[in-house]
Length: 232
Image (cartoon, rainbow, N blue to C red; front, top):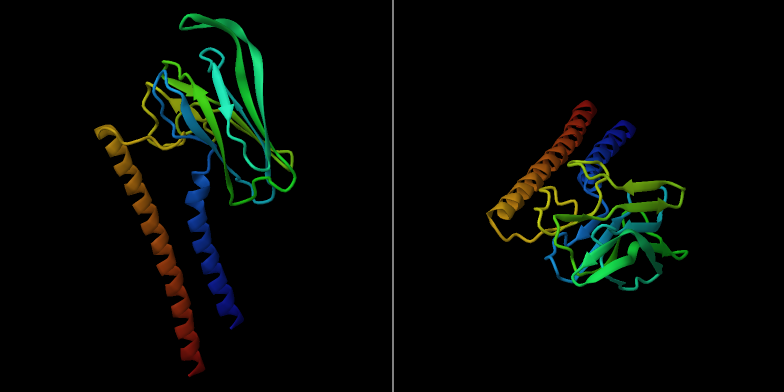
């Protein structure tokens, strides 16, 4: 009986691991929605998941561009978190319309009060209003995620398929098919094709997980049958 229990536990653990793997692989700091129109005032959410099983997320810092700055940055208060808008002098003056901008908000910092950190399996959303959106390809917004154990994860990589991609808001450029920057609206055939690919990937993963589940059940049934036969 002890051996049977061990095998059942192992099979169950394998299934849980398979279920958790796809979720962990897609847990990135992102901007959602990840598309905006030039000249608009975009309301976006900075989505921050906790990827550590042993530590909690206590701070998140998002950097805003200095070459194409936003002249208006405001936030929606999040319960249990303090928010700081860091305004700095720009490296060089930027002309926006009839105005020349010499300083702007270059960073937004959210810090958790004790007891409100992001724990394992949790996701926190931080809303921001940004505008006017510059007429550019994309706006990269690198993020730094600080954990209670001292670990700092830098979401700053702009290469395709990166392990820690930088959050980005797409204006004239097309969002990546992986959707790490958020969820773009499907407005043309290209987007529809992207959604079809994502659906196919989800189906493939689901079938794979289903196969593992069936396999685990088969192992349990086989062992039970052998023990029954031995008892007879």
